[in-house]
Amino acid sequence: MDNKKFEKISRALSDASRITILQEVRKKQECMYCAEITDMLDLTQPSVSHHLKQLVDADLLISEKEGRNIKYLLNQDVLAAYIDRLNELRK
Image 1: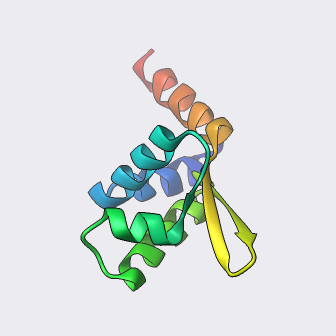
Image 2 (image 1 turned 45 degrees about the vertical axis):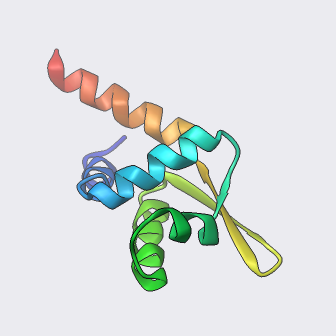
Image 3 (image 1 turned 90 degrees about the horizontal axis):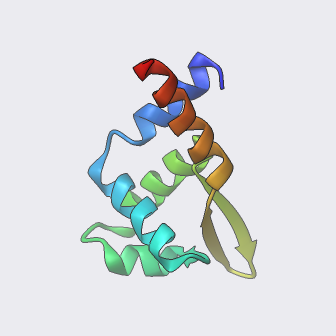
């Protein structure tokens, strides 16, 4: 993982709402739809969409269109690579 990608992920993780979204998607273990995420957070739909876009742009979430809905899945590979990079900083 290069520095630019590492920085993008770090910025995406710098917001409590985005961390909450990742935690909830992980708990669900399958996927979550935008409407579910909006219902879960005390935020407007445009705010939730903004947070989801940040997470997708950082490759932490994978978005898949399913008819008129979009479902979001946790990108385990990118998250693992980010954690590995953090562990490298500790050494």
